Amino acid sequence: MAITRYADWVSPEGRGFVKVDNTLTPDPVKGKEIFAKTCSTCHGDNGGGQYNDDGAGMARTYKAAAFVKGKIPFGQGNTLTDQEAIDVASYFTHLPRPVKANKDKDWPKGGAPVDVRR
Image (cartoon, rainbow, N blue to C red; front, side, top):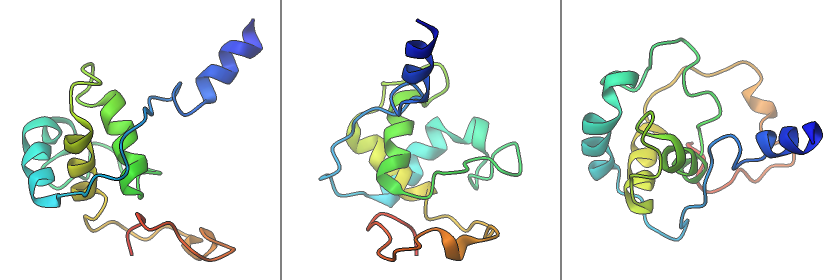
């Protein structure tokens, strides 16, 4: 029983990720508006968050949108549409961020996914 619960918890769905339609076209302009209304209370106007490492692992638009859809706004997950989640993710995943150590090792086989910020 415990191992089943652990497996559920470490699965993408158990961590708050839900499926989103990744064929939708992101609109970062609309995403900025949604971010201002929905996210800035916790994450600040510039998306920096309350902690230095806020947003770790959220560099991919559609992956971030899957988390946003399931968990954001805090305590109100699954209230944004797929399009809204993708729009807001396209906005914040392309904000300036510090470059982390060993970034050159992110894609050792090359071919970063299309939704990774460049």
